[in-house]
Amino acid sequence: MIKPLVLFLCTGNICRSPMAAALFRAHARAQGDGDAYRIESAGTWGVDGAPASENAQRIMQQRGLSLTEHRARTVNASLVQEADLIVVMTRSHRDALAAEFPGIRYKLHLMSELDNLQYDISDPYGRSLQTYEMCASDLNALIEHGYPRIAQWLAPIAQLSDSRT
Image (cartoon, rainbow, N blue to C red; front, side, top):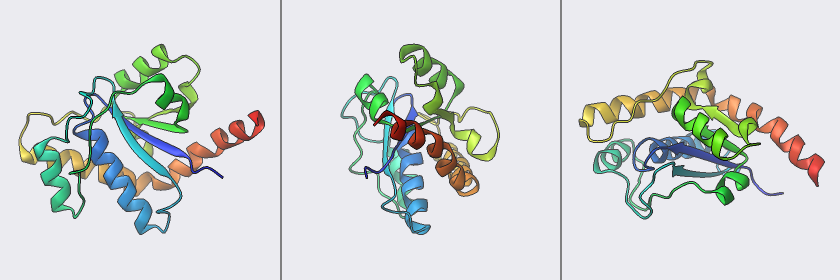
């Protein structure tokens, strides 16, 4: 069985989505689910090959996580089709993907929906280290509170995939 691909998506793929992927990966390991998912990130306007922002790397390092190997990439049709679940940072990311790739709306969820809310995760790019810390704390709290929701979101998608094979 192929592990489901959970894709975190933001704009440039150098701040929010790599931090969310690293935090989710760490939480999955802590829950004993380290091998349950493939976890990746991308951006709608990524500068392919760019490293994570310096402040994102610093904040993750303070949490014992590393983004040094991360390289930004732009989302494309192949990645969207491969992803089983796409967790986006803003409503505009969700709407843009749904418009560009019709038929994938069922895969798209706002990060804030992990806690039954609907709000955008603000981009900390170019802002203070404290702003990055607030963003990382928000992402982490959403993951901690809403971690079981990932499996709930994947369940009907898995059934849909099974029915296609």
